[in-house]
Image 1 (tube, rainbow, N blue to C red):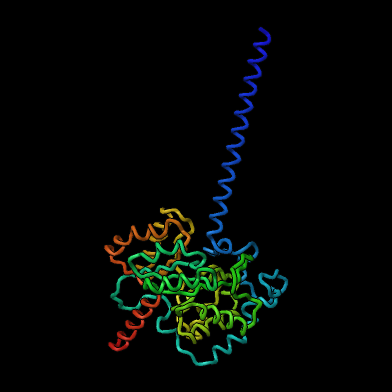
Image 2: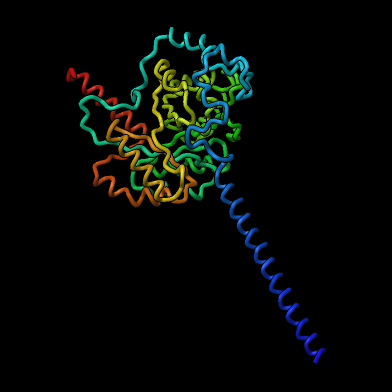
Length: 354
C-alpha cells in the first residue's frame, strides 16, 4: 500500500510541476508577443513621439515671456548657448532688417480669418502628417473622396513613392520639414537645428523641396518647438517659402512661436493649425476633435485640423462622417484652395467697395 501511495504522490507532483511549467511558458510567449507588438507599433511612428500639443519640458513653460535680462542663467534648450537662444534680443537686428524692407502683407491667402460679409460655407481643412516613413498606411487617405493635404517627410525610403502617389491621386502635397524640438526628440534626417546658420538652413530646406518629384504647395514643421520660436531660424525658412511661392503652415507644437509675425512682415502665405485630430487615436476622441474643428470653422470661417498617417482609426472615421459633414453644410478644402478663395473674396470686396 505504501508503494502505491508513494507512486501516486509522485504522479501528482509531476502533474503539478508540468502545469506550472506550462503556465510559465505561456506567460513568456504572451510577453514576447506583446513586446513585439509594442515594438512594431513604435516603429510605425517615425523618430519617436511627435509633438502633438503644446509640449514643453519642465522649466521651459515660461520661456516665451521671460525678459532677456533675466534669461542669462537659464539652461540651454538647444545646441545654442543660453545667450544664443534668446529669441528676442539676439534676433532683434534681423527683425529690424525685415521691418525696414518693403513687403506685401501676407501672401494671397493672408492669415486665417473670417472675411467681413463672407457668404462661403464654414471650411474644414485636413492635413495628414508623417507620410513617407512607409507607404502602406497612405492608401486609405488617398482614397478619401474629398480634398486633403498630405505632408511628406523628406528623403526617406518611401518619400518619392508617396509624392508620386499623392500627385496621381490629386491630393495636395506639403513638405513636412523636420525641425529641432525643445525636448530633444530626434526629428529625423535633413532637419533644421537652431545651431545652423542661415545659409545651411536655406540649403537644407531647398534640398528637401528639390528632392520631391513634384513641387510641394507648402510646408509645415515636424516637431519644431525650438525652431519655430527662434527668429534666426524662421526668417530664412519663411523667406525661402516666399521665394518658392509656397505657404507655411505652423503646426503650433509650442506656444510663443514667431512664425505669424515674421510671415506678416516678410509676406509669406501663412496659416496655423487649430486642432490635432489624433492626440488620442480612438474613434470617440477623433470625433470629439472634429466637433471642436467644426465649432472653430463656424466662428472663424475655417479650421485647420492635423492628423497623422499612422493613426489607425483616422481614415475610416473621416470616410464615415464625410456625408454628414456635407449634409451639415461644411466645405472640405485644401490650404491652397482656401487661400485662393480668400484672395478672390478680398478682391471682390475691394471691387465692390466693402
